[in-house]
Length: 380
Image (tube, rainbow, N blue to C red):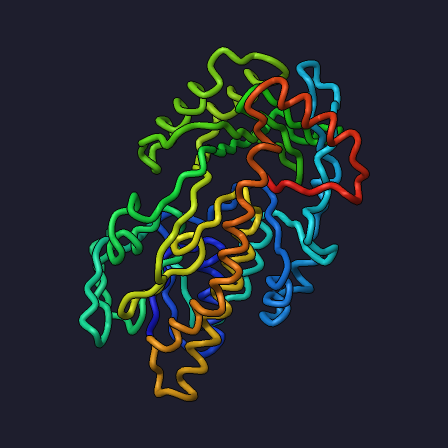
């Protein structure tokens, strides 16, 4: 089949790897000019470990394993450690892998077969499903016809909006925002990663892979803004931390203002009764974002891409390429993982963002009294 994948993130590249490796012709379109490599380390957990093993990528992924969370502390206004970030979420396995997002993206991109290509600087503008194929018009002015279209274009998916309706009908905001910025002046330094809280907010400095990243989280009701306007997003961050000058907050805000690749997103979930309609299906955050607070978005992207590719392959063998049956079975297999991940997202909010000074002190005291083997990891 001739397939279109919208989005060259983890879900999109995994789809291209899995579907192209099964002989389909896959075109990936990505609005950015290159792979977006920014972001804090991510985790591959639970059955997603078996998935990347089946994909033949587990040895490479393990070579890039890091253990950043073992060296992260909450600090007071003077930078003194007051508690250690817990190491492992209850129910997770020592086999789970933490690695840099950019490393996983490069592993997936390098593993693409010759049948899969990426077209940067382009994206879906309109599509028409006539029951026999999907006609697509791109923002570049190009057009194309595809047997299936897969939306792997993230929480603010264009494909989802065009096929399933406005984002507001499916998005559930969890009351938290995350922002990331490179901090090149702090790169190469030593010492543990640090997280500093003021009520309802956190600012952190994380060092890994030879770089330093300023990390922010803050509680807020949903904010209307242009998701592709970094200047507007920087103002949102500055407003959220206005009046807070303890620890290194002003320095980290300066780094955010100076970073042209600054990134801000909400902790939001996508809830849909079905992830397919006609010849279009959704994979990853586009269909079932669990919110970054869950620490399981990467795992869902990988299992979703693998299950979808397997079911399309089985449909070709058994049912004369009935994509509807394949999409339905993909959803049946993936739903339990999505329910589990979305149900865990609330656990990270109170740990990372205590709403009051008293709640912060209680959190620190509880963490100091917990044995390392008994604590739960919160993935930023």
